[in-house]
Length: 211
Image 1 (cartoon, rainbow, N blue to C red):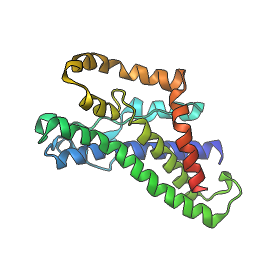
Image 2: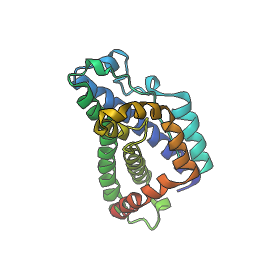
Image 3: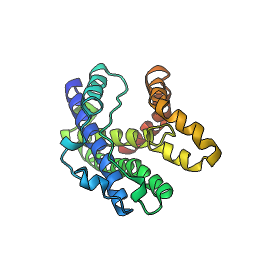
Image 4: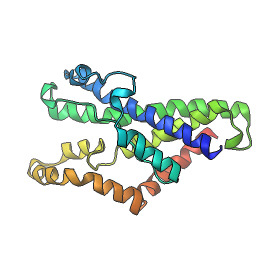
């Protein structure tokens, strides 16, 4: 797959996956009684209301072009915990809806990619049809997003699980730490490479499955 084609497919797949991730938060919040996202016009497939200029466009484009790990995010879907039926419990489910959506999309696109690749019998990824390449890249992107967002580091969704499990006496310390979570993430991704090493076994299994 040429670098230009790969970059375009990866960028498009990432934007779609991130937007669907955010919509799922709002949909589940609505199920639990909070219609804040719906009233804000965020339960839509139109990408415009979801796009964060830096997190959705500039940062992923720079990462894709530079060949470094790509981070991306959309505008967070607004959720009002006080409108949920059981705020502390329901917020965990709302948070996990995003990664669950990405992992579901990963499974579906991996099955499509496996079927297409088996039919084409292409010798390399470069020789695959556009449809097979898109399905494969979309599976990879959603696997990465789903697992990445399960990390228990704020502001990622997995931090909601950790927060729910913490004894009340530790919550004050946790709340002080939360604003610095994004710095920890950047260090793990770009400086230590720990996130990449954590993801590699899962990505290898995905490639083995589809090919």
